[in-house]
Amino acid sequence: MTIDLPHGAAGWLAGGVYRRSPLAGSYYPAELDYVPMTRPAEYAQGALFEQVGATPPAPVLVSLSQRYRILAELVRGLRAGIPGLSCVLVRVYGPDFNIALPADLLAADVLLVHDPVEALPGVLAAGRRNVAVIQQDLRADGPERGANTLAVGLVQPDPDAALRFQAWVRACPLLQALEELRVEALGEGRPS
Amino acid sequence: MNAVSIPQTQAEQDAAWADLETPCFLFDPRTVAEDLEGLRRELGTPVVVSVKANPVLDVLVRCNQDFGDGIEIASMGELNLTIGRMSVPRFINTPALDAGLIAAGLACKATLVVDNPHQLALVERALQTHAAQGKPVPGIVLRINAASLLGHGGAEADHFGMDVPTLRQEVARLSAAASVVKVIGLHVFAGSHSFARNAEALPDRLCELVAELRGQPAAQLELALIGAGLQGDWRARGIDFAAYRRRLRDLQGMVRVMHEAGRAVFARAGTFAVRVLALKELDGKPVVICDGGIAHCFALAQTEQFVKQWRAPRLVRTGAAPAGEDGPVRTYTVIGNSCNRADVIGRLASASVPAPGDILQFADCGAYHTYSPTTFLNLRPARRYIAS
Image 1 (cartoon, rainbow over the protein chains, first blue to last red):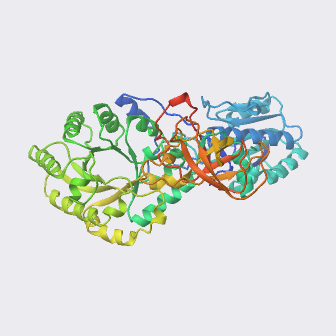
Image 2: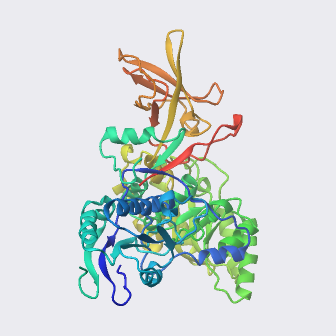
Image 3: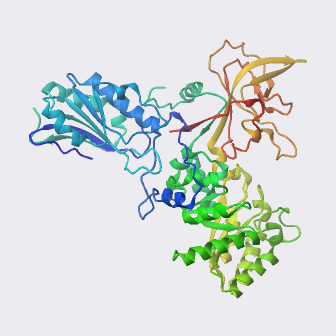
């Protein structure tokens, strides 16, 4: 998973894929609910959501609440770890109607979007630096597409923020639980 | 609990339990996958998983990639549970199959298991409509009554499926009429806990029947689906699976043999837990009163046992209330909260004195936990948790 930055922007990205739950050992309440159907056409349409093919879908590893908790935990970690963090763009599929969003994801410095990369040019054009981006396609339910990847980027970082970002990545259990974790510079030339 | 806490030690796991609301079930999808894979290995065939044994959507979704051989659906409710969520083959199998469930099943490309001639007529009409609309017509599976297949001294009599003469007659009728219905498989289930009793005769009888029917145009048999009937603790039963696999070879030479299992897949993967509400002494015998019981986990009532052997729960201290000092081992009668004199769910032999707020865990309660009979007293249903 990578992030295509707008022209002239630079940053750092840490990302990888979960092969097992990053919360292994913890317990969560069952929360998935079914859709009441009765008519044949509803069953035919419902079946279209099933990912049938030669390659099985990535396994569901987290619940809907756990996915929010992971994102909220990352937002808290970024706030605590990155000096001068201006805002966090977070990819969510939303809305998961039965599940409340954590307060951390509803804060004024968080922008929940379907595609953070699309939102990024506008945010940078407003002159913001130290903009964090959380990209993810963690599967929490059968109909959802995704490969259980997670990436956190810091765009237009100040020099100290860039160093602190890399230190935070090394210390963040949720990121260290990723397989194939890569930390890489983004954009045109290494950020200062 | 912290979002990234990972309890590793027994003490950490016990601490995690203290956060759970009770009564509750905790299910572990990894154990489900492990036991399913073990069953496949021992039976030597694919295994279709019976949803009725654990209709918890969170568990099913987590196990989707492990259930690739298929799932067995027994109601419209179970079908609703899995539509859009599970990307595996479905077998719809219930003596209550009606026109609505037939239509729903065909719409989502499930394989229908037909119990009786009346159902077969309904299915035939539905498939004729299907064919008239230019849709591909799926094959069906016919269910044989196990006692009829095995004959005297075989399976205990039950009401499932068709007796062998009826099945022959229906296949002959379909063949003679050049029906749109093609029978692609036979299904038989000789009852819960019946595996060992029928491990020799059932493959042989099924083999004979498949060989006999294969000559008929309507019987394009490619599948034999056998209800396993294994106990939840099948690993501890000393079953000679190697002999069983040898017994299946002739049948496997003719058709793809699959087993269907529920209890054997889910039992070990679930723990039922209650909290201690109070202790009392009755004529010098200690009693522990809990916040859940047979109304939540009917299996603990042991109605399937001729002689009840009370389950022994594990005591988890939570420190919610001061506990008495340890002393000699005493045997506590553990009772549930349903105001029913039959609500005795276990015997706890412990030197530690249970205290209100402590948790009692009953292992191996992962199968058929929804088979609880009552809304008596409007008791709160058991919470359901999943292990990450």
